[in-house]
Amino acid sequence: MTDLTDLTIAEARDGLRGKSFTARELTQAHVDAIEAANAALNAYVLPTPERALEMAAASDARLGKGEGGSLEGIPLGIKDLFCTKGVRTTACSHILDGFTPTYESTVTTNLWAEGAVMLGKLNNDEFAMGSPNETSHYGPVINPWRGPAPTRSSCPAGRPAARRRPVAARLCMGATATDTGGSIRQPAAFTGTVGIKPTYGRCSRWGIVAFASSLDQAGPIARTVRDAAILLKAMASHDPKDTTSVDAVVPDFEAAVGKGVKGLTIGIPKEYRMPGMAPEIEALWQQGIAWLRDAGAEIKEVSLPHTKYALPSYYIVAPAEASSNLARYDGVRYGLREPGADVLSMYENTREAGFGAEVKRRILIGTYVLSAGYYDAYYLKAQKVRTLIKRDFDQASEGVDAILTPTTPGPAFALGEKSGDPVEMYLNDIFTVTVNMAGLPGISVPAGLSSEGTPLGLQLIGRAFDEETLFRTAQVIEDATGPRPSPADWWSKSA
Image 1 (cartoon, rainbow, N blue to C red):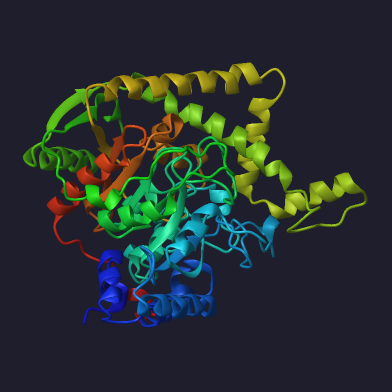
Image 2 (cartoon, rainbow, N blue to C red):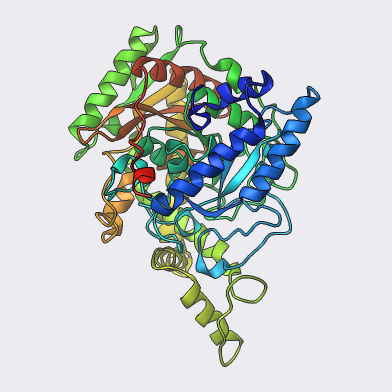
């Protein structure tokens, strides 16, 4: 029998229902894998093996009665931004040391209702701010694709790399993620996994530690397009506790997988051909175009003229919202508290000790652009540009069903290679931030390997609340790439 940790969610679902193995056996296999690999990969900041096995036993009982949800017995990793009742949640920041929520996020509540099993809390950049997952209070996560001397990042820009790396390294069958400027799609591209940022409002933000509230959106990371569709169906819902949650029917996303692209028109934005883009990324893009054309899609060039303003606008809007959201961390109600001579100095000492350098940088930028005299010049102008970016997509979508772009401008980079230059680091978001600014869905699907033998991804951008078209189109790319290699299991050999 195939190693249980190598199964896809769809395969494991069928195996559990067919009684080929139990949920406890499936979960124990992943618990063992985490124990063997986590010291090398640093993917989990808090494994929860006892809780996982208890949840698996409950799943076995339901399966034994012929009951169970769509994810019954499926072990998942949960990003440390999702509040989990009774389980420490820190956003990988020192300032939230020891914080244990008394409530559960809506997304994880939905997953547990469908029978999913929690393996533990996954590492991420502090408050999802950073790039190569170097800003976590618990240390960086290592990309499993980087061999016995792993030196490269699997995630740029705040990308809770751990979410993806455990999926790629077979330490969970799927994972929850969030995407503010590319934090689902970019790590997925760097680790050979599938990641979808759904339309803003598709998944509730309630119970997720906020970075930038008008940009944050939860979504899944998985090994296949079908698995991502299964996970998104379970995660999405209308939630009255989140005023940005949209009251819309959640489709059966899995049913869209395999429908093909005949009759669809795929847009290719001319503005995404940018100076400095790696030649292998351009070649990959052309290959993706050829795959979709061969599958029956029509290819059409489109224009998104305000793309060049997206990155600077994003890095005004996102820090501004972060500055506001992170003002709540003061050492009074929860988390870290550093003593001071008075209340003000206690605030200052706590925030100085509790926040890392990248978070402080973004708070300072955000506070500056919101300050008197600069609000109109920076923040208000950036919001106007955001409106123009959304209009570009609206106009382009009148003639196309989805848009194909690269996910990243290059392959995964070495840890420390870009973190010394924040501007260079932020440039890695160039293909992804437009989707967040416009509130649209975007999916990254593995499409090949770089010259260094590491994964590369292609991105598909869809119309609002039309994730189904993204899944059917992404499946064509997945099928065209054929069987995908897995990273060498160097971590267990070095254990």
